[in-house]
Length: 73
Image 1 (cartoon, rainbow, N blue to C red):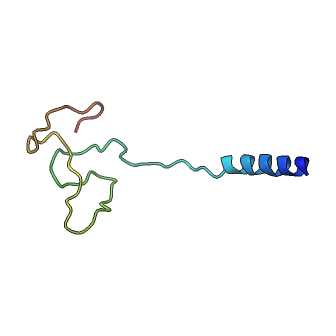
Image 2: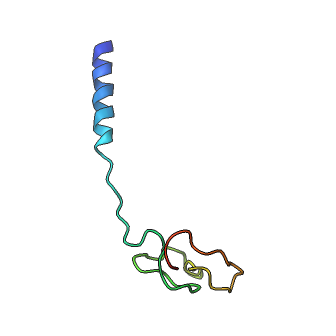
């Protein structure tokens, strides 16, 4: 019984590692022209009606002045 459980557990563990897929993003760092409520290329707005899309900073409109760590936005 113990060997059957061990084999079943190891098989499940082995198969669980093969279920992972890489998620490829077209624009992973939100590169785009700084503007409020404007989606960068490669992204889709999944927000609810009445909510604004994400903002690309720094635009000066929300007192965000920090430059991006990577990229040119």
